[in-house]
Length: 268
Image (cartoon, rainbow, N blue to C red; front, side):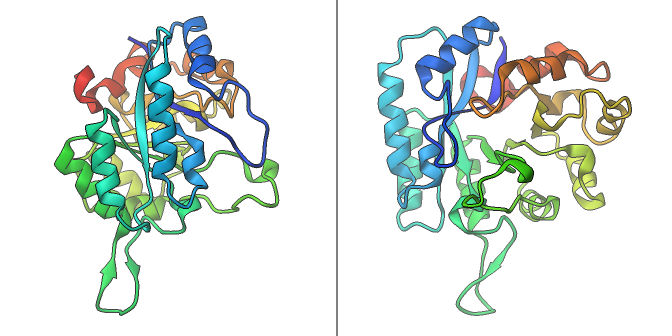
């Protein structure tokens, strides 16, 4: 088993992407002996109704004839009416978990005060609690592209470690994939939390491969069971993160390939 926890299909309005269909991802996966890919539909970051993108992915999955096993994540926008019904329907339809996109859907992972200061609205936690009820994982991407390379029409926000801390400290039961985030850059509070919260996983996309001290710093924050392989395909070249995985002597390379299995019911 070899799981890539960070892949997508669909279109990006700021860049022409390649390998952004299940068929093309399957070609990449077979080339590098990846057996499973955790995937969501990028279109859901921009549709007013994110669930329309989930239905697109569902149709693509029905037509998929490749060898790779895809673990689809339903993009959930908790600011949209009837999001919970749609989210439940997608799990019933065979989706493996939920994806949160606070940067593009306009909410914070931290508690929000809406309408009245006495009525705090913690939208992301609603999804986390639903994931606990349904026993499915959640994936949250900190950002797809570096600030220096982003279109001036794209968002210039990334998710902070304080926001992650605010959310994950409220629920310690759900398996959460934090992608495109560097654990050794986490602040004191979040760093302390993820040492204890072993069902928080990070991918290799922000691992500073050729920095001699990076592995040791990472090792001080997370354990072998929390680091997973993630390619960020189709945004990144697959080879870049395969190299990162090879040059992480502080971590168990074979464990990186399979750690994510603990989060998915069908793979446990």
